[in-house]
Length: 154
Image 1 (cartoon, rainbow, N blue to C red):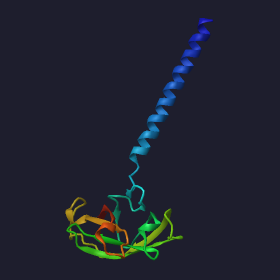
Image 2 (image 1 turned 90 degrees about the vertical axis):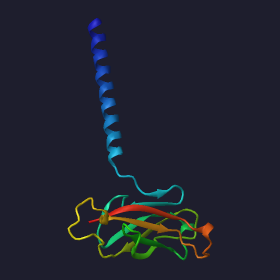
Image 3 (image 1 turned 180 degrees about the vertical axis):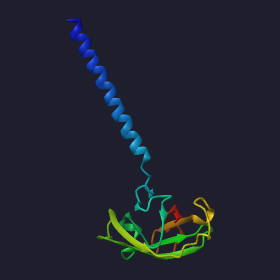
Image 4 (image 1 turned 180 degrees about the horizontal axis):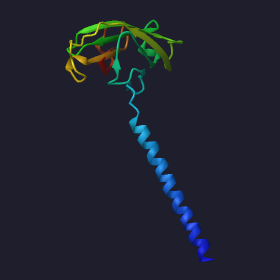
């Protein structure tokens, strides 16, 4: 009888260790995933990720609430390390934009690399910023909004 109890306890101990290992492994994989850029409740960017390396041309994808758009688009801007605009275009809604729900969007940007010749991987000239602006046809400052994220030029 004692032998059966010892076998049972050993089985339970192995099961608990296995469950713990799987939980820790899952958490570490989730922690290793890059965080997506978002303004909670307004806009989510699927690609690129914050701090991702980009090269021309690249595509911006995600979803935004319908009121982020005007006439099914909103501006996307790429700036270099010094804040100079190096590319501007529009993201287009990929569905019905006259809603308060999330609407998929996509936009492409082409640019000339601002990276200094001979710059290493961590050189400041490789840093840039992607800005997704809420379209604001009224021009009123209280209606302005934007999501800004850092990117790195290849």
